[in-house]
Image (cartoon, rainbow over all chains, first blue to last red; front, top):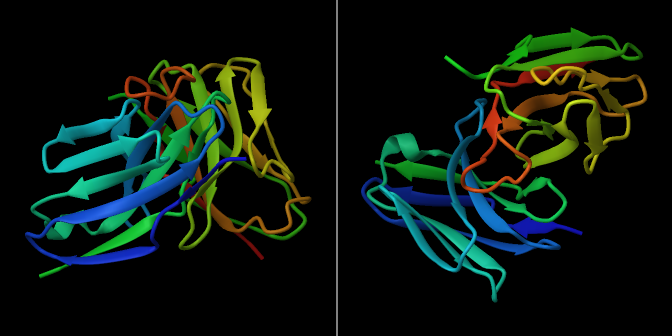
Length: 109
Length: 116
């Protein structure tokens, strides 16, 4: 089967750095994606890693280690608007994208 | 502007009734998906379609049905056989079924279904 595990909640202060981890079990794994969802809204795509290493996009970076079946999303210079749920999602040879349970990030002033 | 439209935003039904949720996209995407989200939970895949006239069951297809007669449209019917239909339903599309960096999911704004 396919499953992804991530922490349910993370709290950080404005301006800080936070890392959201994700471990996965996905048959025929292709890559790891990250999505952001503000309360009650539509999830939006943040990043995708197919190869090992760090991908940087502005204040957000995403890392993947295929040998460890592990990835993380790194958010720097946190802003209040970053308060949201963050989902890792795995894609494999089934043509499906399977999501983790989501991590709720609360940014405090 | 291109995008995915789900309607209605809120839907109320009595138990025992079938209900169809609409999803339309004008992004010219090949693949479309239906996910269900329960409070505080992740997204669970109900059905997906990689090309017109073809679709596959996701992880929680029981009690649901879909059709993909047109590239732009992927309606979801929640039948009376679905035991816990009250949830937030999200439709998504992607350029292809490859689901990589060049083909991420684009989501609609969702339909919140309440069945009493």
